[in-house]
Every structure is written in C-alpha cells, then in structure tokens.
Image 1: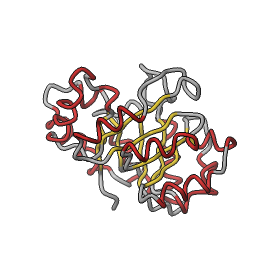
Image 2: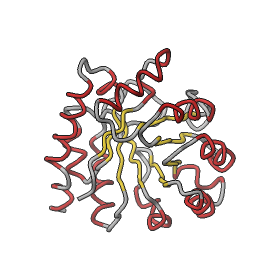
Image 3: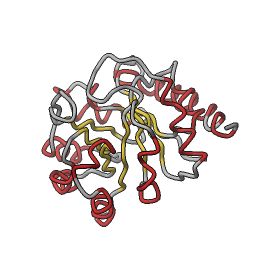
Image 4: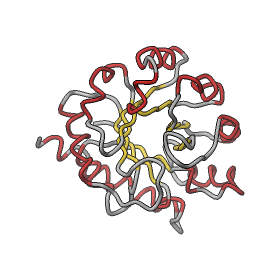
Length: 227
C-alpha cells in the first residue's frame, strides 16, 4: 500500500501570514505543502514564482510539492529547483514544446522527484511514454487555473488505470478534494490528496487532516483492486 499523504494547497492560505500558515498546517499533520504555480499563459491566472518558493523553503519543514501550471517548464526548471522544490511536476499538455525525457532526467539528476500532471479532458494514456521515469502523476479533478469548480468524478478511472497498469509511484489528485470526495479518490488508487479550503478553511485543521487521512486510508485501492 502506498503511503497516504495530505498536501494542503498554500494557494488557500492567508498570504499576509504565510509563515504562520505553513507552521499551522505542518503542526496539524500535513505531509507535503502543495504550491500551485500559474503563469497567466497555460492557465489564465498568475500566482507566484521562484522567489516565493524560496521564501517558503526557509520556513517549511515538509516537502514542497511544486505544481507548474506553466507553458515552459524547461525555461524555469533551474529557478524552481534552486528555490527548493522537492517535487517538480509539470503538465503533459505542454509536451510538444520541448524534450520531455531530457527534462525528466535533468530534474532527477538534481535529486528531486519529478511528476507529470493531466487535465480532466486529457487521456491518461498520454503519459505512457514517460511513466517508468515518473515519481508522481497528478490528476486534475478540476480544470487547472480556475477556481470554484466542483470535483469531477469522471477522472477517477485514470487513477485506477494507472494502478492496474502497474504504476508504482505516487498518484496525486487536485481539485475539490474534501470530506465528501476523498474516499472516492482513494478507492480509485490516489494516495496524495491536495486540499485547499478543506484544510485552511477548517476551524480545527488537525482534526480535518486526521479526518481526511482516516477516510482515505479506509477506502484506499478498493476500486483499483476490483478492476
């Protein structure tokens, strides 16, 4: 069984108190800290760049899970690795813009785990050429870069497909993950759960993370096992 990991999305944190917010969710039991980097091109919104990642790294005690929703991860690879990314994930939808294999190899050569992400309408089979070299697959359960969307259960078969195909790395899911959806994702084979408001909006963050972890642990892999 893969380790269940809860990765609060810092996009939902109070940026005026970012150091305190990081400490809060770490003390509450977060396993990873998820950072959504948006470039205003691959997705319409802008978030933060390497300098903010570097600032987070100075105070964080948990791995920084950096999700690059950007068109050119080749150009910014070293900037984010130098800033302290512990996991470097980019989108399969930008594969035509560069040499994916070389990017994967160069990230891993730096001792950093590498992942690829897929949008809800992208077939999971697009990942096949690179699966053996991935540490993580991030499945978007909403469309990247747009807020206020509901969890899309139609993406769950992607996780099941990956597990039945023998993928041994981490499978992460991002978008609408909370108390009412985490068990479905875990049952499909997801073991890393990106949760924003579900964690940062909870009055008791430790209790919420424990609740999410328990729900995921109880359901993990049941759908994939029956596939």
